[in-house]
Amino acid sequence: MIGNYTDSEIEKELELYERITFNLDSNQYFNQIPILSKYVEGPDVLDLGCGPVLHNVGLAYQSAKNILGCDLIAKNLEFIEAQLAKKQMSEKQTRIVNYVRNLSKQKIEDINLNSTWNNFKKSIKLQQQDARDFNPQLAGKFNTVIQCGLIGCFTSKDEIQKTACHIYRYLKPNGVTVWINWTRNSTSTGNPLYSGAEMAEKLTIDLYQEFLENSGFKIEELTETANIRPVSLERGHRSVIWAVARK
Image (cartoon, rainbow, N blue to C red):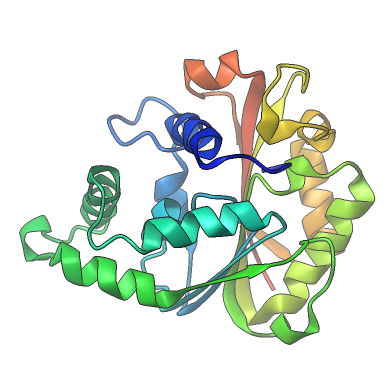
């Protein structure tokens, strides 16, 4: 997210964001949860530009034992901390867990949700950081680095290319990065999530390929789809581009 907001404003935007990105009721529209569930690898995961959603979306990182969520905005991290302080999963979180377990063909009746929630909370650490700045303490530490929506909030190709190179350096040998971004027809819709986010308009699948390959990645999956929910179209989105690439 760009800027600082109250908890109620974050909750309102979060609800809309999850309506756009989580589609747990049908396979009719794009849904990021199956992508994250399938392609996130290894115990050590970095969610770069995690925003205020890690307490929900992180439940899809099935193999993760250590999750570091980094975001520039302190309020986003404070919001996540407040959600993780709760003793039990919300109804939405339970639905995400059950959805992911169905994807992996695990029996829902065999899941101890309280145990899952406690383990998940223990696995998460949060850190305030601008993704455009390289952090040498993170170099070579992660099996997977995720950016969902981050680079669309940047203002130039140079910022994205620099961040892609940082991601490459954060990964362990043979590590994987998962990128998911919504492109936009216009950023003038009054959406605070995209205030000043010029690259959300300019992203293309060719640019995705350029950023990843110029950073040294080998692309394994690269897809663009316009099959997005009506609420997403109303917000000015044009399509979703997503990629999986390996170091």
